[in-house]
Length: 234
Image 1: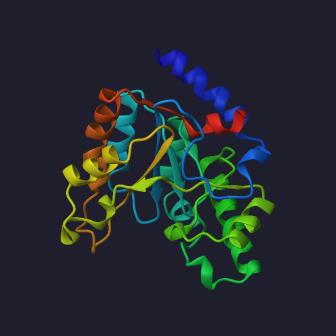
Image 2: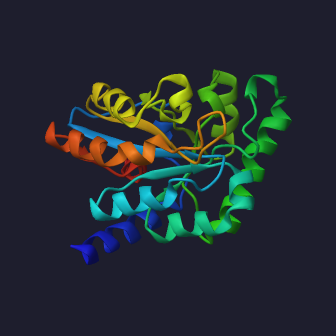
Image 3: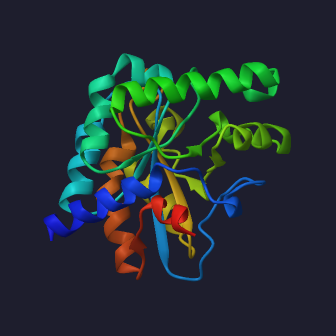
């Protein structure tokens, strides 16, 4: 089984090296277009490595794929973490370089954020990242989406966020993060989680704690965990 998964990851990586198909351009993507009971797991990474080791271990042990969206700044500060994600067979998207609010950027500044992050992620990973961009704060506009599309990226957002990153200070627990994820299940759902921790969030990575229950709960409801790279084959 592990050899089959490794072979599949290699084939998907080859597919991911090209540009996104035209069907993924022109609008933000918040779910996989399908009637099948499938769900995709995605993780943003902008702070530190807290919870990453746990997340990768859970994904490995449960044979579940995921896509990670690091910022370029994260990649520059934590190149080993980005290489580890890539070596585990998971896809790497682009979450800008410094996580700014794109509404306050000029078109040139927006392009710079995307391109600088792409360079940093490629350098850290030693492999081609996915042609997917996720806006900081999911702050999308048709104009901003067109800009990233011109740079060869599809705007890949999410169906729901677990809100685990808010931490206990904002009333969040691993159980509540799990509840939010499972309540959002619908064919083609894309779940957004986070690795890393902030002082405001209590220094915890609740999404890492919640991940086993999210995967097991989704599967018990008849959902398969799918790799976002399957979007690139159509």
